[in-house]
Length: 172
Image (cartoon, rainbow, N blue to C red; front, side, top):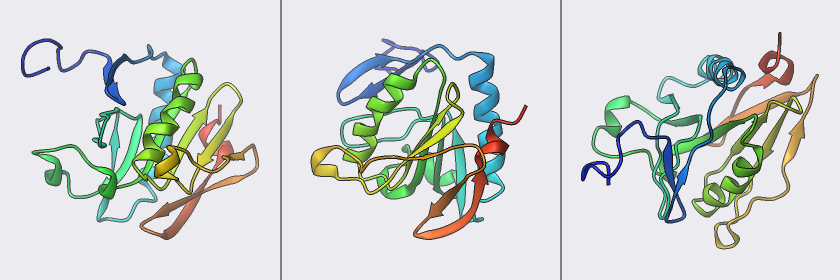
């Protein structure tokens, strides 16, 4: 539809389960938190992986644009297509005004068997981590909620990396 001129490349939309959905408006607190989480995660990603920021991924029936995605590198791997579930270790959505819709997106990511999905919940100052996707049910197991003082583990290709302290995300 972008190539046909129906939408512009920078229109705030994404394809979720076959529906074109308008993305939420971002505020400064959201954008600053995305930047902070990007800095923290990028410092922990192995050289053969990379962090994509607010870039599309492709699943069987959706093309969401998560705030962050850890995907296999190099960047040139994605010149002809967006990362697909087999390329993705972690998807992160930062939620301020978008918490309800970001929780709904768990269906999309679980159905695609994406191993980890985080919601960085700005209002409650917690990180909700969804794991153990059940694609047939389009669901994850119950989320683990990490609060102040806790460290959120990062797992990439079944290898645990140094985690991120919740306090580092929400400092200031």
